[in-house]
Every structure is written in structure tokens, then in C-alpha cells.
Image 1: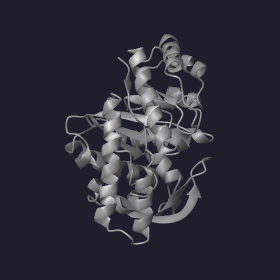
Image 2 (image 1 turned 180 degrees about the vertical axis):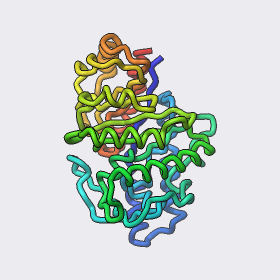
Image 3 (image 1 turned 45 degrees about the vertical axis):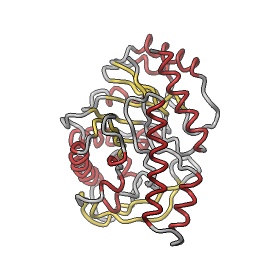
Length: 316
């Protein structure tokens, strides 16, 4: 049976955008801002429930980017300059690594909103991949990138341990850096060792999510790593290239384009997945956006979630 779920952050409503701007100018209180976040999250949970998605995410509505919460969650990380987020017209605040990275052990409930997710719904947490975190950082405190990646992986493992107690059953690591440029053997080796630290044996489902680039050239390596699922950006990775690999893991088909407002056809997605199932024969399949939907207007993102749901229903 084909599953479907989201793979990243979700766009904020106009009301929430206005509230965050007002809070930055000290025009509204933190409780008022939290209420605005809660309202958006309730609507996102309802959307996922109505769409019949198999795991619920919180949309990372109060994450300004993939890394910024970790200046609070991790010791040794400060906020740096604004930098372009890969080839998108959006920006992230570069993490500055100033000391050994350790999980502080607090503030998780501020950035993982499990208290607002339904208790009877399987929860999915989205985390930065250790290699992408290191590559996108300014490193002032480590002589070895491998050592930094290892400390990030250990800290993520501690976060996962706590999130499991709060009911999370699925952990996704976002690794766009690995497939965006030229991937080296050193990158792949660091990623393997990092996953052995943060993903192996945690007792819950794990996924590596690749986007913004072609992942086909190193899939044989990835399929040997200690994870359950591999999510691919099918707008960057050619479907025909997948036939060259023995897909022994669950395949995440990033078939909803999070960087284009053009709406997909559920019937076309059904045909695409049928072609993949016949040619690749993966262990199983889940449908998902190819990346975060936050690049889109909220109304378009909502329509794409419903198309994802319709495609899942058509495939059966």
C-alpha cells in the first residue's frame, strides 16, 4: 500500500506572517504570537488529516530556517550572516560553530510542537542532516569536518531519544548538500558514519531526504546505509536512472514540486508511480513533495497537499 506524507516546512498564513512581524517590533506579546502559531498549526493538522496522510508533521512554522533553532538547542552554535539557501530566492542564517557541539537538553517543545499534534496520529520529525548542517556552517572550533559531523550526529541522536518519548515514530534527515554539487567519497563516508550514530537502531522509522539535486550517482552507497527510506527529488533525479539500482529500501517519490506553483495532475502522478513500481520494484513507496512547500503561497501549498492525497487514492 502506498503512503503519503509531507517532507518539510509549510508556508505560513498571512495572519501568522503579520503576527511575526509585529512581534519583531514588540507590537504584540509572545502569548499572542504563540496563539497565531497554534491557529496555523491546527489548520495544517486538519489539512493533513482530511488528506489522509499517514504521518503528521508540525510544518516547522516557527523555524525561520532549517538550522536556526539549533543555536538554542545546541551548545557551541551561534547565529551568523544571512546566506542564500542553495539556488532558491530565500535565505538562511549561517550557523557559526564556536565550540564543541552538545545538545543542551531543553527547548525541544518550542520547536517540535508535539503538544499540538493529535495523540492518535503517527508523528514525523524533520531534522537537518549532519553533513548538510556542517557544510552550511562557518566552522571556527573544529580542525576536522568529520569530527564536527560526528558531534552533530550524537546531538541529533539525543534529540531523537527525547522525541520518541513524546510519541514520534518517524525521523527524517534532510541532506540537500549531498546531492546539490559534486559529491565526494569523503562526503558519503561521513554521512554513513553519521547515520550509524544518529539513525541506527533507534527503533523507529528513519529516512534520508535528498532535494535540489540528482542523487542517482551515489544511490548504491545510500542503499547500504542504516536507514529505512530514501526520499528523492524526482524533478532533479531522472526516473530512468533508478532502474540501475537494486532498491531494497522504501522509496520516497518527491513528485509534488515545492518550487513551482504549477499544479500537478493526480492522474499523471498515478502513471508516474506505476512506471516506477514496474521498473524499479522498490520495497515500498511513499508519495511526498520533492522539498519544503514553504517556497509556495499557502493556498497553492494546500492545493498540492490535496493533489498528493488524490494521487494516493488513485494508486490505492
